[in-house]
Image (cartoon, rainbow, N blue to C red):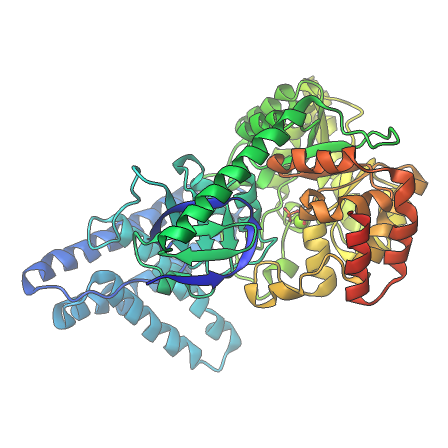
Length: 574
Ligand code: PEP
Ligand code: MG
C-alpha cells in the first residue's frame, strides 16, 4: 500500500531506496514468539549479553578517564548495581522460558516494570534514577542486538538503502558516514538538532520529526524521500517513481553546475568581498570544504573527536587532528571550537543526566568544570597554531567570568608551552560564540576582550525563543524571522562592526539562501556553513548588490507582523 508522511526537512536532495529499520538510541524492540526448541539458545544469548555488559562496565571502570574522577566511578557503580538487579539480570530469563518470547522483548518488559517501581518513590532523587535504569537496559540491549539472534536483516548493499529510526544521536549518525546510506529518516528531532546538522554535513537527504515512520514503514519497503519538502512516500506507484527519478537527476545536475563556481571569489555586484567558510566535524571533512570552494573553516566542531569511543583523545591525537586541518587548509583561516560537549553530545560512559541538558553543564561550562580535559585540548590547539592559520573559538559564553577564566587557562597553557620550548602562534586569535541571549545583549562586555565573534544562530534561537532544538514537538516554533531574533542579529552584527571586531554567523541560518541577503543587509561579511551549501550561497552573493539591501532590511527590522516580514523578505530575495 502506498502512503505519504510529512516531517521536517533538514537536509535536501531526493533519495530513492529500500527501508532499513534500526533502533539505535531508544528501547524499541520487536516481539517474537519462539518455538520451544529455541528457548535454551535464547536464554544463552541473554546470558552472553549480560556477561558482555558486565565486562564493558569493568573495562570502563578500569580505564576511567582521569578527568572524570570520583563522580564517574559512583555513576558506574550505580549502573553496575542496576545491572545486577534481579529484575534485569534474572527475570528476563524466566520470562523467555515461560512466555517463549525473544530476549529483547523480555528485557524491555522487565525494564518497564522496574522503571514503574522507581516511579512510585516519593523521593525525587530516587524517582530520577529511572533514567539510569533505562540507560543500563539500553546498554544491555545493545549487547543483545550485537549477539546473533532475531534481529532485522542487515542493510543490503546492492540497492540504495534508507535508514529509518525512531531517533538518532549525532554520535550514531557520524558513525554511518562510511556506510553510504541514501537518506536518513527519524520520528524525533528538530531542524537544528546536531543530528540534522551532521546529516547536512554528510550531504545526505534527511527528514526528521516524522512521528510514526518507524511503526508504519516495513523493512525493505521502497521509499522516496524528498529532503527539500520533508516528504516521505512509501511504496510509490510507477508514475510517482518515474517523476521523482527525473527530479533526482535534475537536482544532481544543478549541484554539478553550482560546483563550477568553486574558484570564483564570492564578491557582490558592487565588489565587496564576502568570506564563505565551511563547518566541519572531522579533519577529513576539509576535502569537501575545499571541493565546494570554502575559503576557510569557520567552525570545526572539535567535540566530535570525543564521541563514539571508550577512551578520550589524548593531547597527541588531538594535536594531530588540529594540525591536519590547519596544514590542510594551507594558510586559510581555521577556526577550531573548544569542545561543545554536553546536551545532545555526550562522552560514552560518562553520560550526565540533567533535567535540562541544554541549560546545564554544556560547552564552555563543561570545559571549565573539567580543567584537566580542557588544558589537554588547549595544549593541542595551541601547538597546532604553529602549522597554519588557527583561531580558537569558545562556545556558549554567557557570563564574563567564564571568558576571564578561559583567557586565564589559555595564558597559563601558553606559559607551560613557553617553558617547554614548544612553538605556537603567540598572536593566536581568540573568539567567542554568541549563542546565548545574555551574550548578545551584553555584547560590549565580551567583544572588548575577544578578537572575533561568531554567532551560533542554532542556539541563539533555541535560547531566545525557549524551544529545545532537538524536540520535534516544538520545532514549528523555531523561527529565525522572529522579530526578537532579527533584532538580536542586527544588534550583534552592527555592534561588532562599530567596534571593529570581525563577526561571522556559523549557525544553520548561514547556509540558508533565504537569509543570505538579510544577513548581508545587517552588515555581515562572513558566513560559515556546511560545505555543500557554499556554492548556493556564493551564487546568491554574486547576484547581490549591497547598497540596495538597506531600505528593505530596515523595513524588515521595523515590521512586527510575521506575514509582513515574510513578504518583505521575499522582495529582498527577488
Ligand atoms: C550554533 O549554535 O548555531 C552553532 C553553530 O553551534 P552548534 O550547532 O554546534 O551548537
Ligand atoms: Mg551552538
